[in-house]
Length: 189
Image 1 (cartoon, one colour):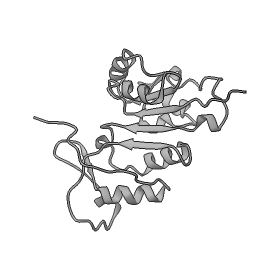
Image 2 (cartoon, helix red, strand yellow; image 1 turned 90 degrees about the vertical axis):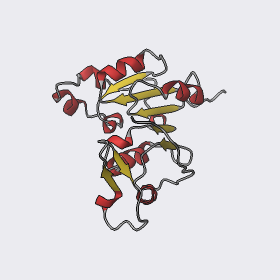
Image 3 (cartoon, rainbow, N blue to C red; image 1 turned 180 degrees about the horizontal axis):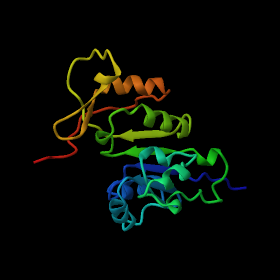
């Protein structure tokens, strides 16, 4: 008897799919990988990379089951077929859990990350799931006294977040911070 587990990944705010090839290499050719983005034009570019099994046009929270197809279909830019149900081969509840969720350069476009962290925590495989993301750090005092101070809209039009508040948010959702390091991810100008 040979048992094998199908790995599942989700790329939040996938854009043109730049992270898709690395995610495919990491999880392997048999993995099931979905991507979600607000822009249908970006998703069309991601489709050309041939690394995703399913592309979802919508908000990052639309990617977490149960899929809000009826609500999403009411929005003009989202079609019902964008929210089709999961493949019948992946119907067991445990098989629906995600092994990795990535958010490369998406959180600077989201202020309050609490709903996203909560959704990830509910759908990440307990004990082994990985949630990896990038963000722009909001410099300042370590003392966070309110939720509003946890993030700020910057002059660039992107949100910056305080790493201390994200550590607290992760702990609140029973997510363990394994690694955190500064890096230059984009150059504007």
